[in-house]
Length: 233
Image (cartoon, rainbow, N blue to C red; front, top):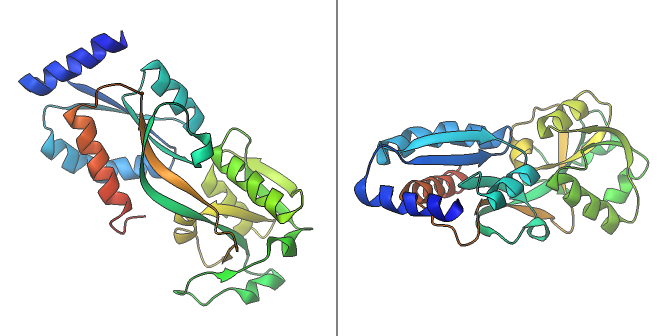
């Protein structure tokens, strides 16, 4: 079935029919936001392309890509979590620690507009944290960060929404670790810090190993790359 699908994609690229369907996996939240921003240009470049966006968490996307159910997927994860399928890195993103603005350590934060100040995570050893649930690559990154810091976090709450981490920290209940994208969209109710190891993960596009990338898929990848490297992140 996958061979048949690839063959059809090759044919559609050649004859430019209106039958070409591109199914794209998108991470909840910012993946869908990126898609709504770049879709008008994608449609302008590929007017005969029928696009089906599917909002899906990273590990489920990886399974769907391997099965051939998604043509491509926008995925955020560390390199260690990649499968045997194909990946193209769009950008690399650093993780930041956030604390409530009323926390005693918040006074160490850099002034607005300046790079985040450095924080030793062990200073938060006895503080409660809100973290992503265990089915998220972000949790994998955070687990590695805490291992490096030499302590197990006091987990107050687990969520399946990164924006929920920001909301919990804003409520002054706990601390959190989030990708830089969500720091930029947070309010002045949190103070942000970087870590000495500057942990990162990749924003990437993935597709089934050995499968044919249609012209529509290539256009999406190019637009996604421009989006994440053009000041929209």
